[in-house]
Length: 212
Image 1 (cartoon, rainbow, N blue to C red):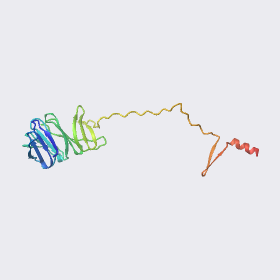
Image 2 (image 1 turned 180 degrees about the vertical axis):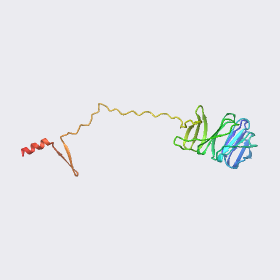
Image 3 (image 1 turned 60 degrees about the vertical axis):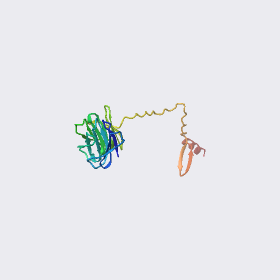
Image 4 (image 1 turned 90 degrees about the vertical axis):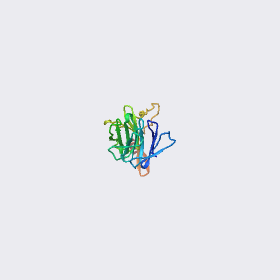
């Protein structure tokens, strides 16, 4: 069993593996087992007013019922990738998300689904598993690459805004600190292997030669 929802009539419905569908009209005290027209797995179920429900799942399969599963209508999606998450909008509208960045939207129950592919800023098409509408910004989608904002109609898709990083201030040199003393320029270092010799400047050498 993969998903549960409460219909507008108060009835409970469950969708699961291999075409499994269960419903209860007494708050879950007793359940009636039904079979879906599709024998594959269903990963989610949405509900609206009365007994209007919709199930979605493997390979882009979507089925809709207006009598709590007594009869089903196959809904065309135009895709063959699995659908993993969804959200019910007003008047039978819906948004579904799934593998390869798939996003399906419809405005109401009478409108067909429109398929789009979500891409991250780096060009990835993630496996999407959940979606929520965001006022004035489109949809917040989550998946294996994190959370992102999906903006329909070609708007830029971004990650949710984050708190800006605090600026790094350059270090200031304390004027009271003493600077290291400069090396005396009259001493010269000469390296011969591992030995270090110190010799006086040229003026001192001339005095030694004159005294000799």
